[in-house]
Image (tube, rainbow over all chains, first blue to last red):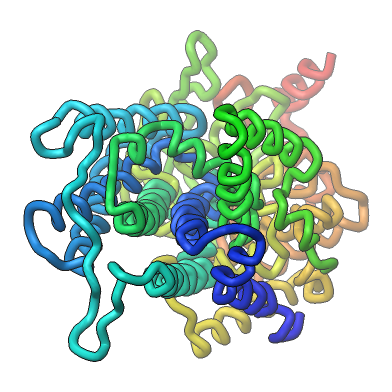
Length: 316
Length: 250
């Protein structure tokens, strides 16, 4: 494969993303919608680091997504008037929680692992739901708004301009994708593929499988919590639904929809998911049943997802 | 001379079934030892015990004088015990080259390297090519290993075990299901690594031609215990061995 060919997907992806506010607007969308696609896409790509490239299914990534969001909201509401600090706090909260929970569950496999991740996720959901005084409970946490980032002339007006916020989000997606891409092409990334392909062989090559799954889990949750932090900033709001198990399920759907064996697949899946939701929910409350039907069709007919279908494995 | 592997009175029970029953064995450094026996004699269980897949019900296992009974498979690989499986264990959706590359990178202590490095990637590539060259697999290096012939898959697994630079190599029926020509190729490979690297090898094998050709000594297992031990000539004339095999056949 030539250099150009190898990097083509990244080029196509960046071109589409950079111009998204325009073509989405032309198609009847709006800038916020573009930001939502990128943010949920980042969460799904984070989940897929674990699901698609380590072979471990987490059904509880909304926990880290939501912790990122609450970290941002509570920092801006109670602590420091700085979007940057808020994002750092959110990412730290989600990642630390994942490091602790991951260490407890990393010996479990398959459906047991998935079930326990749901259970831990729901713990955070109920805390946010019940702890009215601090989290705002069921009504969510309001009374704060995202603030500009940067200093002096290098200030990005996140608050006043939806477009500025979109490019801020896109830049963070770019950095995250680069980081995940580099990790996956490193020897460490190859040990994760090894675990996905054949855990027993990986173990008998001397790879401490549990430790590597834990690392992958933490990396994966880090990007999910970054996405959650941005999600809260996008809406100037966070509520317990961001932590709930159905949000976790949506991330899995996005990853599988777009193609969990391809790097950009989950982003495509998030795009399809969000656009379908936006399109159908204006007409009917039961938009999820349409997304569900579409999901079933994809799984039945294109098991490698939308992107896996568009871009067949090159003959080797 | 002290033994590289010392198995001391090891028993493995699965419920009521006694798969290995008070087995003891000494393997000298540089020895190629064949382990034979009728089906159900406990050969694979014995390999699982030595490689750490399961922990024995009782008894101890020593490797190079060190008690490894409680160590995990990963730790034993670190000490130099590598193995292949009766049913090939490889990474089917990766290429042959990638399969070996992972093994080489783990062995050279790079499994936690998070970045790409031209120099180290180059070193890894050289080592991978060297391994592929042992069985002439270079032309198929970029093929997905799951698409290769059974023989090439088995060969890839053996190369992965060799990539670990082991001091003790456990081969569980390496030529099972192979054509005569493939069997010859694998037997040659085993003979060469044993001769050139003085690698200690434990070999479970059914093909008597391969055993006669390769093994320094043979241990015959029956019902989880050692029935006889000796050279090929000594073993094949042993009445008890003949009874165990023929008895099992009838």
